[in-house]
View (cartoon, rainbow, N blue to C red):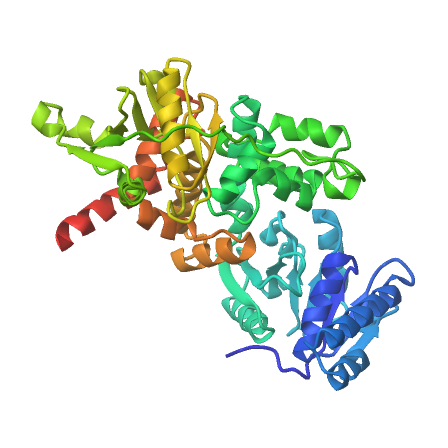
Length: 515
């Protein structure tokens, strides 16, 4: 293990919320910590603020009084960059501008020793470009903490093009010694989390812009069906609309305006109007005193059907059949192949037939309106645990079909939200795109499959990693959803990546070998 010795001083430059958090992490781990800020007096104020947080840790019995006193004694505000001489690691958390970071690192090279690691906490800039300003670029590494740094465990350890492997290894091991979970990644736009996570926001915004559902309903479906901790609208209100939109725009530009990362016009208008989320009092939701938060659309109670006819096994939604039987509803099986239907069409058309003759099918990326009198239901992380299920009812669906579909899920103890005619609905299209970007990131060497899943679980609290989700769903199912979405909207946004196609073929071959 190559972690820095606890006697080695660590410096943090930039004393905003993130800088203070990083300093607290290093301090509690046992290092002497030096704080520096270009604004006179700011470092002293930050040291006082960190001291107050240490007091709260003592009150919560997460730190002893002796530990707090020792930590305070190790914390030193620096009056100038010269006060950082002798540090073994300097982490910058200054303004997110390339020129500012390059200027700082050039100045630091004249102060610190040759063995000192220079780490940037950038979330969207190129570590390679930041290190490119140095005489010794091999010492530059990305240490991307997530806010709040003392609480969130993930740290992305980013290797720039010129980063020495030994520097990355030391940064990685030091982060682990600080109690964090580091994941190694290459220097590509967005690194792991901010690259792979873009569809979580983009697809929610797209459904809203297409008037498929309101923000409260979309958020509720993502939480209660998809298993996500927060919905996209409430999460971006918490992050700050300006911050989230800026990261999206940065990733989009860095990928040469790849359509898969196109920013949302609706979010741009929100930022332009000053509705930045919780910090401004209004965002997608109203946080001003006395304001009432709108609830999701929830269907009125409907009668459950006496039976359903299962055509196929429902694929990723197969566990529904057991739930339906447990609810006392008869499930009649029908072999569609025996009725002369081609095997390919039978596999794509796994569905339930309702007593009125209408059909109920899992969202597969095709527009519900393309299938006469068929209501689609959305993907769920776990249908048994889900508390809400979304239905998409096209204009062609008979009222009886919608009522029977609604009553069926209500009989399973689920709230039902009926949304518009949206291909891929909400959870299905979101998860399919997350899987695609995750598979592509692994194929391009951005990070290992294990690190990608770890990053998405710990960095943005996903219920499971995208690659684990793909194993549950089947890569072919994911590719099929995206292929159908691409047919509906052939802009390239939903086109399955070549990496996903290779991944699906490999999964098929492995399954064939093991069977």
